[in-house]
Image (cartoon, rainbow, N blue to C red; front, side, top):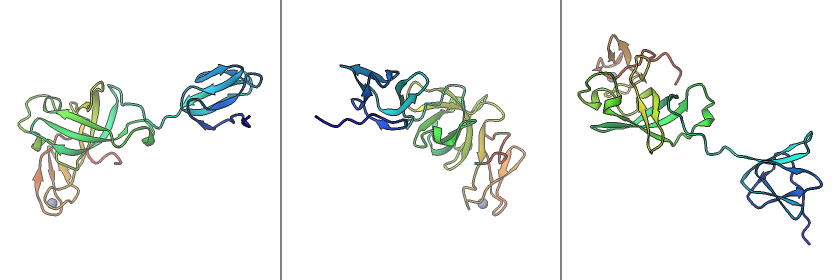
Length: 195
Ligand SMILES: [Zn+2]
């Protein structure tokens, strides 16, 4: 017969892994009992509660939670199309950076850029811009964002000619190096947030 080792607090386990016997622990969340033996029913981390003598398996959060509608996110513009911009999420404001999958993509439809008419996406966003946006829908991929609101929009941008960081002058952005003037859907927090 196999020598079976009881699981210890913090062990990473897979579904079906042996955890111990019913004489040692009560089965908690993520644990099933079979003929007096305890097995994991999900992948995760073993948690042993010594007071309740209970063993459970906590799901491991290596799949970060989906940003929820209403969350404010920081993202980078990857592509600007005629009707939408594609962005990569960097972080959810007010949460640990590690809690968001940096590979997550999101979109901003032209109707969600600002209040009022948008002539073209290319005068609102450029590739590489860092934006602050609100999540409006997450049921379908990509997640949908909006930059409507005075504190939402571009918070950091580089000159499209010479790549120097642009400086805000009124409603426009000006390149301190080459003098190029550009437009964006600007956030009132332009260059006021650490990105
Ligand atoms: Zn420039």
